Image (cartoon, rainbow, N blue to C red; front, side, top):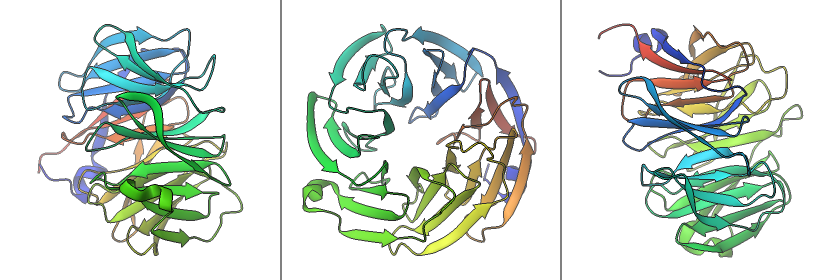
Length: 313
């Protein structure tokens, strides 16, 4: 089944899970698309089976709290940031709920965490105005960048470069092998007076960069030239929340939640809004991801919703 405008318009909530007592703060699909992991402000980690549409298991992280949960390349291990004690990043074995390694260094809340698509390296960015590069095999930071403001960062799909959004106005591209030499490209964008950048993502084909904000706008730019391509607007974000936006696996569509519980979708090519999808979310949808391998989407407030298309094409 191919993702078309019609399929996007016919996405519907197929299942709702109420495993959490507080806001889900991050979600991540495994690379094979078979499981979804979520972290919540209630200090729990829930793993869902995407093929059967069932919760698989729940792990608790009462001592350190849990945020920004990310699968590593092994489906039985994950990374997450902490919300209590300190700002150490923790590497967790999901199989026996034991920590494999700690990554200390950040002195303030970690606001961005992403795993390399190709190897054991990962990036973290914090309100301490640094981006750190790590390797899962060592607790020592492999590289450190000092910035002038809050960072957002992400790897490209090949894992060779990463983008850093600085001060909500500049996107800098770094080569992973020589990032201490500084960026090889920098794109300055018109600054949003009303909102800050809260996320940055490359499209799966590597050609586009999507910038999400804590306001009612998303920006799409060309990943090579930095040219502004689209501004996606018309969704509610009246609380200044960081709303996660995501690409479809074919890079043709962008999806984003809203504070009024609806999901909006646009065409990356034309910028046209294709659909406003009604979700049964009682709270703001701050997390939304499309499954990398299967025709399904997940969105979360306190509840988790799995979406499937109604039509057969």
